[in-house]
Image (cartoon, rainbow, N blue to C red; front, side, top):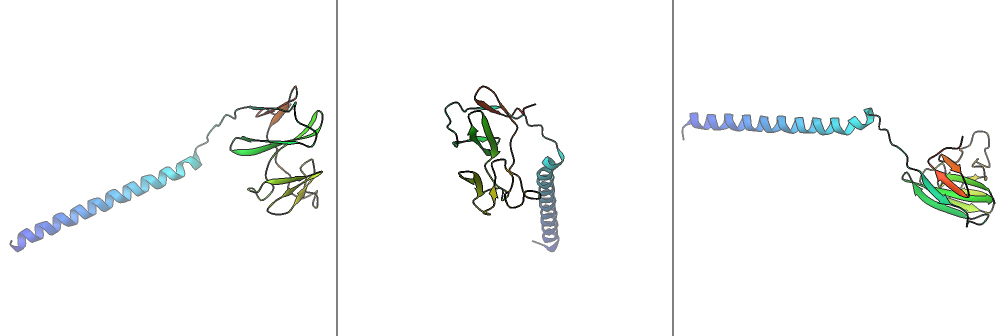
Length: 147
């Protein structure tokens, strides 16, 4: 092989490497752009209603269900009075432990009353979150807020 053939092979190799690098950068850019695109799009999710029959529950009993990828708990306070809440405190991930007349966040140790307010800090404390729900004929219907 003479030097001219070697030069042509090197040139072809350089062009091939540059093309592969360009394609890799384009693919990387597309992947990055697609990963950020959900942040800019508004997704309309329609919540599906979930009905919980509370007719057999006793006062002080808690029923837990999974709704909209979160655990929701229903505590029966009186024959026709309930406290419906997401079963996590201000830590966000740890479940609540029910103790007679209060809830305790297992991770932080914070206490909440039966209305969901933080006991030690009523004015500025965290309040337990509640999903939209309706009470109807001994049933709690999650997903439809009471008007």
